[in-house]
Image (cartoon, rainbow, N blue to C red; front, side, top):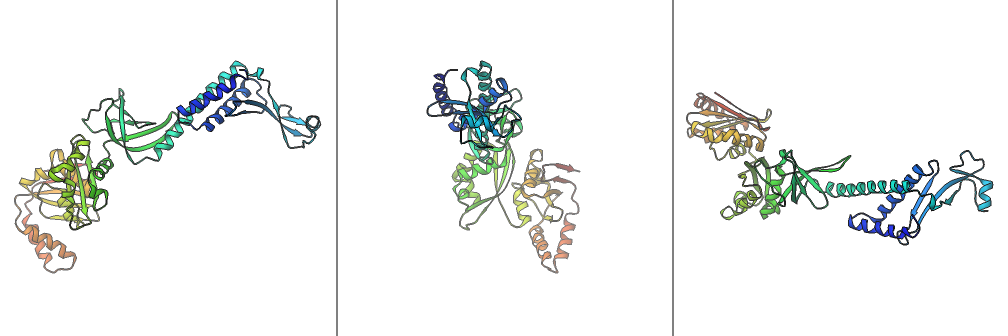
Amino acid sequence: MTQSDIPNFAEALKEVAQLRNINELALIEAFEQSLSQAYTRNVEPDKRVEVHLDPESGELEVLIVREVVEKVEDENVQISLADALELDPEVEIGMEMEFPVDQEKFSRIALQAAKQTLTQKMRETERNLVFNEYKDKEGQVINATVVRMDNKQNYFVELGSGEAILPPREQIPGERLLNGNRVKVYLKEVRKTPKGPTILASRADERLLDYLLKQEIPEVANGIVEVKAISREAGQRSKVAVYSHNSNVDPIGACIGHRGNRIQAVTGELGRERVDVILWDANTREFIRNALSPAKVGFIEVNADTGEAAVTVTSDQLSLAIGKGGQNVRLAAKLTGFKIDLRETQAVSDLDAAMQQAMQDEAGGNETSSSAKSAFDALFKDAKSVATASPDGTQDIQE
């Protein structure tokens, strides 16, 4: 490598820095370090070497550094004061002196090693840039482009300067993505690995649905309508509990939109996944009642200490309350956070509403509530089956 080659190489580093979106000074520093290591390893292993590349002129300096000492113990890294004074009359003990290296000593092996180390440094720099960029975006929803699928059914999506993996568990079941498709993904996790940053994306996460609701429904975006809870079985059905902070705004109507246009825009992004919008209620019993819709259920007894709720349902509403494959009661349990027991009865009289009030009065010390509850319990003593769903999604139906 001759001196005339150096400016061209410095210019090449600048071009690489611009092309790869890498800080130019960081790249030059990596080059200096890699060349120093290569020279020490392949040319003069015991020397202390420093390399300096001027980014403007392209001038390269390779220097052997030696410390000035009274008595030399290692001539590779030290020089005696007497010898140093012959070179520089102002030198003192403890100072360092630099000695230029003859460029002829830069063997082809050293340059090749420097090139390999530089390539590695460039990869590390790029990986760090990608990690830092997307670590800050963790927990956000961004647009991505599908680029390929591997033999394990993992989709890979291009985010811009990085690539994310969309594994089967984070995909919408049944959704087929083609190369070039533009999709919205939730960045679930960004972590460092020996092979570079790994970005985990999701289209099955509940927070993607929350994001879409904010995007499509102005009242949700500005906080007038609050999304209190979401339970989701991606690609099939979701339940969303909403509440309005403005008495003049119907939260369900705001989410559905005129002729369903708003909620259809949300479901369209999710492969036509069904989204049920229900009213959140501070009263746990009413919240559970709403969560089990479209089924009409009877009396609800809640045990806040155990996180369980017993719900009485007539025979003609039981299958609707359970849902296909237990999905309705399972989603309701996830939404409310209560384990829900569905208790079947042949019929429910008009006492339902009265008994609901009686149970509420009991907490306030109403003396009539005890007898009312007894009457209600007698009404449903012929219950013949129970369906149970827990917030974690497990379900059991007993005869």
